[in-house]
Length: 264
Image (cartoon, rainbow, N blue to C red; front, top):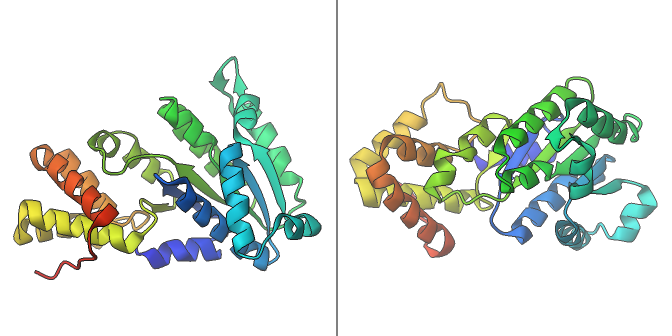
């Protein structure tokens, strides 16, 4: 999936899209959420944010930088903010995720917008994931997908995961990718792609690097996930001896290295 596909999700081309941004920097997440919400506000849509207090502060600041101050949003009644922790507690019964409680809580929130086009950002799934309850986070994602069958909204989820950690690539990340229609593994998609391609070339050599990209980038692949992320997932699963070196180098190149294009 190219960055333009993520841009299309943010712009609302898929009004029932279900996106996920994998982030390590809360400021970058806030920028993405603000772009997602502000694009909707400009089109007359409304927003629901279910987030931690710290992220609410960052998101509202990012919205203000885009011209959507708290006063402007309040005057147009376009945004409802809910606390992620309290909302999570409301959908748990005896400490376990309840489909019935979720349907009641989320359904009531969404129905409160009276059918207006709605964009939602939520990080309850991230709270569960960070507590090691990945299976419940994925079950909650499935409940959101089911809810989209009866209500119209687009949904952006945030996951604080380290994409350059082999345990993340072998563990929760592939499953997170499968339950979303759009995935942004790193905030700067072009730099991420270039970093992964450079790491593949440096560790495997140009020929094997091209082979990996050919395998994961075939015409039959689901394009919900960028090729670069599929490449990291594939080498982690199939080339464990080289995967850690590739991931370590890709991390270094993404955070501080120059842009690079695979043309060898």
